[in-house]
Length: 271
Image (cartoon, rainbow, N blue to C red; front, side, top):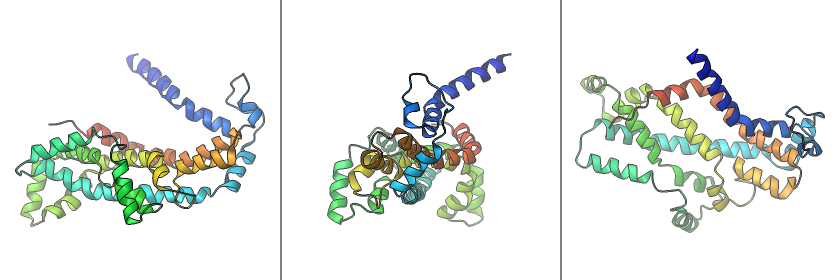
């Protein structure tokens, strides 16, 4: 009985959280006059999906936005893992002077909002001539203190005997990190990958600062361009554009949800 009640409550909460997305998909299938009716119905009386989605693809380079999003999110995730996995391993398994101080600095880094270093980063990228490039979108996010913290917590739960056995076999510390530790940390890596990709795919603040024009626009910025330049009051087409831009995230989560839940469940909060 208790499990049935819990299931009903969780299902209701999940449906409540999903309602904005469900409404967005519903609106993308309706003509504009149906969207603003006083009565709220999710199933359209007149399906206008072909017209709404057709206007999106006809007016803006949707594929270019999606490709830009893949390049930016993939590049950011690659460098974040490249730096965070060794750093997390060092903080979790290696003994060195100042380790706790470094970990404290990482924790302090979690408190710094991304808006604080935006101005000096912009000035530096401008001096390098990197504005409106993929480098400007990727470089400021290559080091994630959250990733270092997450991997450090996960690596703390791995048995030391695994590392000792690898050292006896003659493996270097870097070889241990990439060939022993990381394969055992795939759930945590998958969980972080979902967090990272969702955050940077939906990020509008930084692309709006360093990108001008459609050529390097990310999905979120592409939706903004479509709204201001093309859609106007065409909310059916605007919701269709939002549905297109968010569809890759939904598919990615559905594919990786098992690993994601496993990674969240197994990443402890050990000190």
